[in-house]
Amino acid sequence: RNYKLLHLDTASLLASYTDTLRKLKLSSDIVDCNISGHYNFSQITDALYNYAANLLPQIVKKDSGVAVNENFNFALNLKRPYLLTNFFIPELTVDPFNATGSINSAQNRVLLDVSIPQALYKDMVFRKLSLNTKTTENGSPKLVLNCGAYYQSDSLYLENTSAALTFENNNVLFDINAPKTITRLSAHLQGKLVLTDSLYSLVFENSSINSKERVWIISNESNIGYKPKTEKYIIEGLKISNLYEAIYVNGSISKDIDDTLRVDFDHFNVADV
Image 1: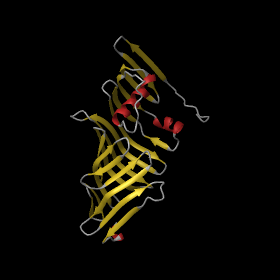
Image 2: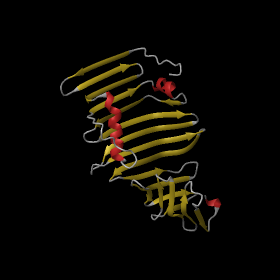
Image 3: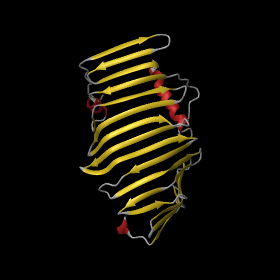
């Protein structure tokens, strides 16, 4: 790639199969991988695409002409990831990490558990990263992301931050926690993203932002919408307030020059932000 060569000092690939089970074991100085079950590498991309289409049918359109039947478990040990990142993304450096999971296309289920001690990209440092997918008690897919710390230019901006996304009835329920750091800001955002073919609506529920010891509440009536066909953003009833001040935002933004966005301030003090 771009006149670069990826060297493998040692590598071993063992494969076995029966009528009901296939196994693949890769051992090398860069990565070890074990796969067991029913798999077809040529269909894995289609299986993941169909999974995304079932989660977000209004955004990712399912290709009904593609039939996939993937059902396997995998375990990955990336021992020297810097050799791969240097090959594809030279600015990215990732510590060695493990990943386990499974794909079952018949049940539309993808389970993934990844933990990365540290990742560096340019002047940004991410520590204790984890990504986990699971299924809730009512069968809804859930994605959980965690970041132990985020530094930029040696300054700590985020610590113990988490985000949980639950895909339920064509809605995406979100719960985001960002504790306070040197930015003096913290936030707890939750609500749902309501998806239809013509409108994506972001609705907040019991969400707040802390700034300089003041708690700013995002009104539950706040609604931020996006119309994909006309590329228009619509903001209705967005209110962010504390005990003394308030900000109100209403209107729309698009390529239409007649669109207007109105921002009103009530006893607002810039020094409190």
